Length: 215
Image (cartoon, rainbow, N blue to C red; front, side, top):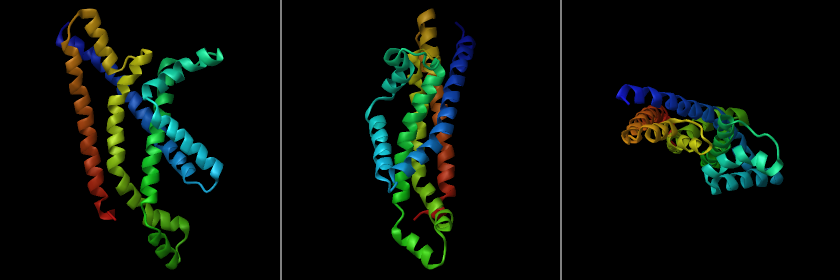
């Protein structure tokens, strides 16, 4: 195969990689915040439930979670489960929401109680204190760990191949298997490096924007 033909086939796989990445972020970022609120709740059953969920998700491999979401309904309950790509999306969102929730929780709990008390002394409501005093400090503190997780997500998209979703790595493996050439496996490294490089630059810019709120 020519270099152009391989590139076009890999771009098809790269589109799936990017799509999975974006959908996972859109689902996991807000869900992670909801889980974080639950894990900090004063209502004990909710707190134990959410922390138990996070413990299970963080303690098991993402690959296993993908397999369970796709094959589990049929093997365990004998019912039709999700199609391949939606199953991968669900597994990824649940996994990354659990990790994001811990980042959110750590950021929120890192703000000293004195700042809340100072806001109350000034006559601010809890909502005003959160949005005017706390929020931007939390964002500043969670940007580095959040950036690391999001860059890891780029590479984790390759796990979609375990249920035969043709993302970037699966596309390269198919080319290698059909045409007995090895270089496409190394070529896809350029795609990942470009993607993660752009994200690194983006997070560096965002972090600098929030330097004012360093506490």
